[in-house]
Image (cartoon, rainbow, N blue to C red; front, side):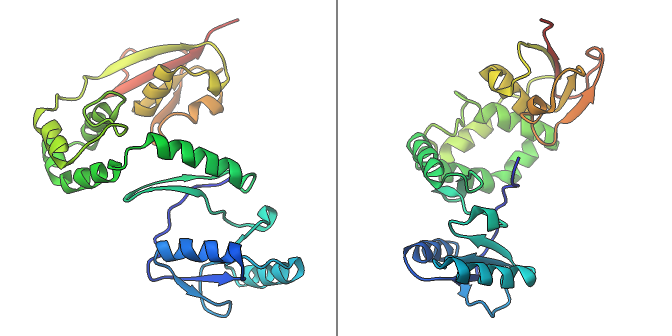
Length: 257
């Protein structure tokens, strides 16, 4: 992973913007949407965007800013960027960022357009309803693990809260009132046909995204384990345990050739 995606809350905070022309105006509009306070080079700020067209002038400004410890986005100069600005799908409060590390803004835009076509316009309302009902959800499932499993089931493809379907607050309340208890503790054994993560089946990818822990043989590479939830336990083992623990556990091994 070449970069760590982060979401910064910039409302009211200073961000340096240098440059004129179309590129600088595009970045100005983006900062305005984020309600940032746009300032000049001499201001105190943690972030800067340099959209100066002249190479010599731009590189000098970038060097000055970096010498002060400011993180810099250098427009059209990916090798000089401390951070990049992604293509954005905005379904407030749901935000999806697509980045290529500066490799191709056109590719990021094309992916964004595909996602825009797939994502319902009211997915933001679904997020707001879940936030509003968080106290009721916490009361229904006091354990964080129980809540996560209940939400995983509801938000799965074809589930009652499938994010690619239309929803409103009433729909979330109906789910909460009728939701089944999360599936009991279980172990699922998966034999992989390849060490290539692109060969994972949709079922395996879904289970890895839901699992509480991953037991795996030594021949399962990190590239596959990266596809699991970031906070799921990873446990190297010679064989699946007899008592795997609470929630969903997976046993991963690669089939011998």
